Length: 375
Image 1 (cartoon, helix red, strand yellow):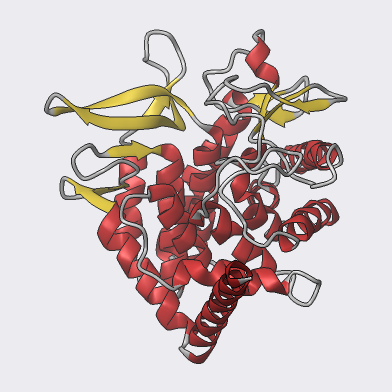
Image 2 (image 1 turned 135 degrees about the horizontal axis):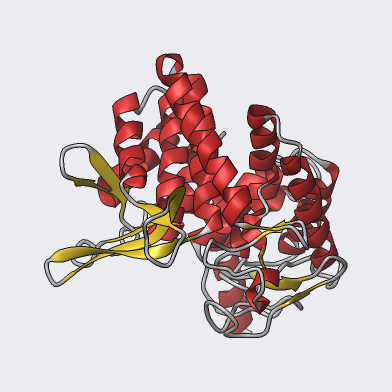
């Protein structure tokens, strides 16, 4: 009996805690929360390299790591902060210069340079090492940031636009499979290999595809958008939860989740640290397929007492802890679907703004910041 009472008290404390956070965010100027989050992220994760380059540190202070994905996020966040008056063009250009200094090569002798970014740089034995090969998501993020920059800073619009078009052309040339109509995971994928059919679900970025189609007047981006969203719909329909895996095998007609340890780790075929971006991605899609997939996932999460940091596609949890990497995108998604039965998630997931930004979690901190400034 006493145990049941204690459980009840504990539950009420959690509810009151969420309500307190809700009113704190509502009463305070939302821009204060946005600004505080951005400033903490900038201080903790942006690292100057020389006088004219900045990278987003995906590692630690002792062992810094730069990733094309992180650089893309950083460029997007900076454009959003610039719109709010918190960042300058010089801040964007330093991040951009780092990307320009680490573009990839697509031939074996590393002489044919392209506009795609090398996916990883790290510091070892007193010097920096940059690993060849690109990652498609990072390249797409950089492209959309350039598109936004061309509109924010008109004096350099032509410069940013030209870089965007070159990058867009190389994405379609080196990160696209014409047999499936889908983007591959990077320029390392040979079209005559099995990995040509490897499908990373977080590469489905309908809002970016739409912008690229408008900017470049290339209808192929519309085809890519439709083909990749169709695969997501198929994956969503395969389980009652509507959850989507990090990676899948995709042919022209079919798609299925990969087995564990296919490419990145044991959770490759589950809703893990790639697919967790989808509630943010799809909420920005503004098309029927994106909204269909989004609603299915939010409906599932709205039924959970706690949203944990990873799930099997059947809904079984992978861990027993919360993670801002999962909660931040869901919070963003709910903000675009208010009054549609998911508002409990608006209260429960905003815990990410009730405490300081994580100092040892680049991914969670960056997604939290991205959601904060991308309103």
